[in-house]
Image 1 (cartoon, helix red, strand yellow):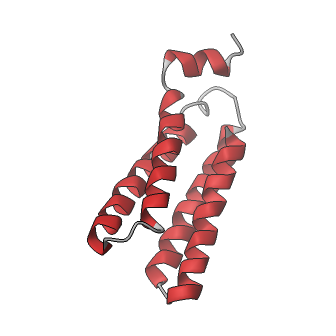
Image 2 (image 1 turned 90 degrees about the horizontal axis):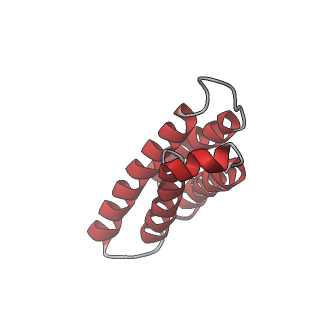
Image 3 (image 1 turned 30 degrees about the vertical axis):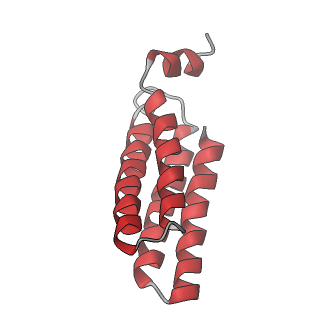
Length: 114
């Protein structure tokens, strides 16, 4: 799961940079780099499987995905355009489901190789 988290974080960071370069949106740059950095940090921590480390990077990534989902849906409804806000919302929803699955029985079984 850390590899997908890196890709998700990098996508957000690069999207923020492109948003700034294309439209001059400082908001896009700041939020894209902020959430991208948080998610890449979570990806680093997900690789640590020791006691006490297991749950919190997944919880932070889930929270970041939920916030991004609701911000993106709100932005898409305000603007009336689907691209890029709806794409970020869809990606955040899917990744949020992945992070949430970690807190289920199936996530524990996958984690321990059962």
